Image 1 (cartoon, one colour):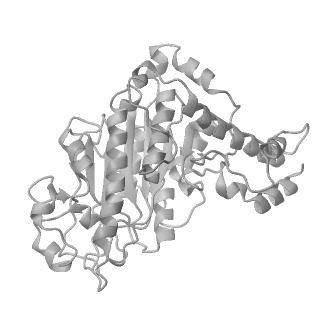
Image 2: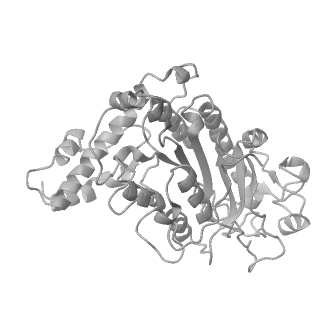
Amino acid sequence: MDALTRRRFLRRSGVAAGAALVVGAGGGFGLAELLATAEKGPDVVARDEDKLVIVTLYGGNDGLNTVIPYADPAYHAARPELAYAPEDVLHLNESLGLSPGLSGLKRLWNEERLAVVLGVGYPKPDRSHFRSMDIWQTAAPAAPVATGWVGRWLDGTNASPEAAVSFEPVLPPLLAGSTRAGACVTINALQLPSGIKKEMISALGKTQQDEPELQARAAKAFHDFLWVDQLVREAEKAEPSTEASELTYVPGTGTGGDSLLATQLALVSRCIEAGVPTRVYSVSLGGFDTHADERPAQERLLKQLDDGLSGFMDRLAKTEAGRRVTVVVYSEFGRRVRANASDGTDHGTAGPVFVLGSGVAGGLYGEQPSLTDLDDGDLKATTDFRDVFGTLLGSVLHADPAQYISNHQFKLLPLFGAPK
């Protein structure tokens, strides 16, 4: 089949929007072979096996009602109906505390497994959801670029298709490189449009002799599309390691009472325990665009976040592989300081970023933005988000941050040093 026909197929079938799309990847191999590689010896385990889980909160989470400056009179004056009373806040210190819905994260804070980076943003804030998320995911605030910061790392390391996996409905720009891309895997197994069968996708993935390079790459994308989906399905069925077998099984599919984020994280933990060699996972939770009646809506979302993350972190802490995982949680912007007339908040600028893990030095990093020294009613960012991602590139992916995030003078954070 020629490249044009493949392209027409993609357009008509909707496959690219709903499932994996990986380009330029290496050859496929099964889970048993992956586990066998992990069993070769301690040197293999000690090699760069640290993993990163990126949690994106879509919609612009209100950072001031997540990490709350409860002791600041300006906070209560700016949002009289939205502000939390000091006695309702989970105190981190004498001035800041977590939302009451984040009790699990507060426990992780007490155990020094949670770092909170304050006032994170970027120069010349853009209040568009699309543009701001694009800036965070590409790490390029000056002008739009076509690749994400993880995607550029995939390019630079000639990564195989399982190196970065998203359990979201579509592949986030974060994982798109110029020659490589992460894999997007649906939660509830591969779902193809009516009339499209796996056999048809498999046929599209077969390369032909003397095929032009672009056609061969298109074919490889279809091959990897099916292979990564199969890899994750095998992980769901695989026998866990000795350590993991002693844990209560967490199902990888959605069941009653589970949030979608918890389901995504359960599948991530299952892959980690099964030995899937993915280095970066991307998951997400949406709905944070709280323009009206914010408190009950945000409280529900933060409770979902808290339940998902705290259970995930506790499970990770019980295995050697899990203890090598770092989690980062961010949103595209915070909200304006002053509440609006609908008991909500409008698009703002800076907000907190959470970094969690057994190797994380828990504590506060950076400076809480002033609530009285504002930029046209918005917080002034005190930490550049590229310094957070640069730190994760260096300390978790063991890469040179400058190679994958350009035009930035890094101020890397001591997130993985001794506890503060």
